[in-house]
Image (cartoon, rainbow, N blue to C red; front, side, top):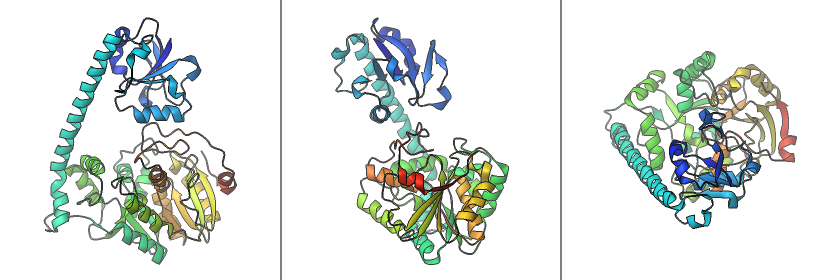
Length: 420
């Protein structure tokens, strides 16, 4: 019996006792990029995207919250009957006597459950700590006592109206853009680049006609945002980090709201009607417009959904998904050539922030829309953050590799490629 083990590497010393003598571990699978192609216990560690499926009879998943991982393997072509979710309480272990030593399997499942509960308790304790640390700023925003300084940020609705009414371009800033300015780039999609950092820093303070600067509204009460997202923001927004942001901002300037590109996933996922209204409001921007997408080579905005179905026409410039700023001049020149008299929608990480500004300066209408198309896919799926096989996502572990799909409309819409 040939098997692969997904996760659970830290329990490797238990495997000899856990698995039946007839079961042989051929290799491990893990979503962590840092582990890929490394060896442990004489066995190779594969990504879920490239392991040799034909060599094994089963994949045993040791991750406690297994459902998303199991579905990911199925989406990648693994037969569901060949997947053993070890922590599934409905799993009849006696059906796998040729794989496990049953007494040890029962004990190990209990041990994994205890480990999981301990981690959950630790996460709750940390979340409470972050809440208490950050609450003074949230309270100040709610009660407007004026004792704490907060950036001036318009609502999402006001931001949308500004774009439509004045045909304004928009550059958005989230933690990724700030971390590049501070020299701590999230290198999964953009490495540190001094020129990019300086451009981002300067645009934050700009006051260009027909162009607005938007911030993620993370500094005050975060009203309406789901608790899980608030916890992540609180963990990030330490007093030190808040001070670093404030030092880069013009606290007298009116900023707009970067969460215009987050109509769904940061809000309670069961509030589907409110999310639909936010998407419908945004669709007014490109209604009957000739649209030019500038996107990564694995982004595929609008493919498989109707988010942009009301646009008059759609054309695309394809750029690198990662480190796009390395070929910034080529992207900019292509945008100038193909973007005249079009609405330009850019999904290209922090490069989009700069590009939207430069195009606005040149007299074009350009919007940095970030993960808006992924947000719509998640909304249609109705599961919050989830795996979309044919679309690149730099925010979820393991979702930067995609399964290519044949789409003739997508291929016909490509008018230029700017790749490294």
